Amino acid sequence: MAEPVRTDVVIIGAGPVGLFAVFELGLLDLKCHLIDILDRPGGQCAELYPEKPIYDIPAWPTISAQGLVDRLMEQIAPFRPGFTFNRMVAGLEKLEDGSFRVTTDEGEIFEAPVVVVAAGGGSFQPKRPPIPGIEAFEGESIFYSVRRMEEFRGHDVLIVGGGDSALDWTLNLQPLARSMTLVHRRPEFRAAPDSVNKMYALQETGGLEFQIGQVTALKGEGGRLEAAVVKGPDGDVEIAATRMLPFFGLTMKLGPIADWGLNLHENLIEVDTEKFESNVPGIFAIGDINWYPGKLKLILSGFHEAALMSQAAKRIVSPGERIVFQYTTSSTKLQKKLGVA
Amino acid sequence: MAKITYVAFDGTRFDVEAEDGSTVMENAIRNGVPGIEAECGGACACATCHVYVDEAWTDVVGEPEAMEEDMLDFAYDVRPNSRLSCQIRVSDALDGLVVTVPERQG
Image 1: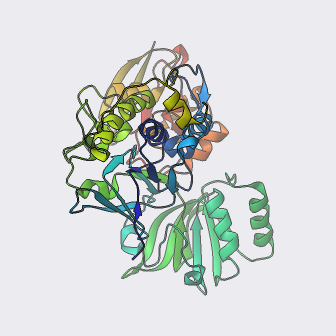
Image 2 (image 1 turned 180 degrees about the horizontal axis):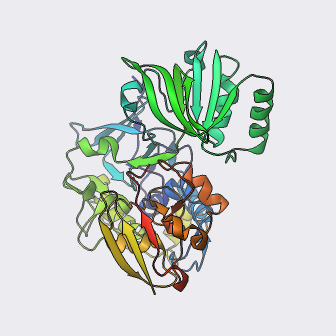
């Protein structure tokens, strides 16, 4: 078992609200560690719409979503938060001393007296393509990511999609596979042109097949895939496939959070509006993942929630310590923490 | 203003008076048309507001732009008349538009 990392606050989700929580908690001398399933900070802002302008961030008439994330990272840098990316929080348990133990799907352990759920719309997970009966093949013949390339050696591999993941794995697995087929619904790709050219070059020399169309049915038994039916421009085509990798983007799922005994309101965590604490003392929820009467899913609401939550978190981490309310404009103490005084 | 008719997957018709400049997705959400999810809130960043534009209207509504085509890769049962409804802006020219909601969104 991995050595537990002790910190003051574990923040689940490194989207804009989770990031800003580091700032508010940091002003109160609380150390934070953030865990996110994506490979970088920013949450939906980074994953879904990095180049889209946001118009309702106070004092920013317009800012791109990635720009907002970059500036938040700059703003919280003085507090040196810890980050663990590419991990889903799998378990949460209460320890005897009243603190919480948070475990990731890869076995890392974090312990802290306060847990803040800032998980937005939930964790990003690969989207399951809507093909009837696909569940029966998942984990056996159909995978949404490549953990070990060897598992594809000698197989008839079918890759579905037109983005970078689809093209990269088509090229990487092609030398191992017995046969390789790429299926995409149109001749244009989202992937890097260089990968697309390489794919077409391999098609020319017979190294792989490229089929335009959409997979509509799967054939096989007991989880063992044998073929896929592709509806193409000239009707249905059956393609031999013993391994399939669909790349249909990501969707958001609440995931294991649903099993932590938190009161939920339509898949959102119910909180009070004084501390944004759930029904479990010490577990807070801020941003899009929480619910209270009048809730608005706005980034700016999440920022406000982070500030109020931090006051309550401080009382848990440092019981009995007097909290002096201070402004960053005038307090040299706060300015020292920010590295500007 | 334009009257837009949404035909749900079960055949139920929803007639909606839509304001110019709003999107076909927004009007569907506001009027509770079943089957339009709009997970990303209209940023052309998911494919859960997918509709089929009635054949008689495809020329008026027009073709999707490149980014929308990219997102349509993630939609279910994409057809030549597929569009993401968050990318269709309402104008007087669309008065009478009919769109059909697919069996499922992605």
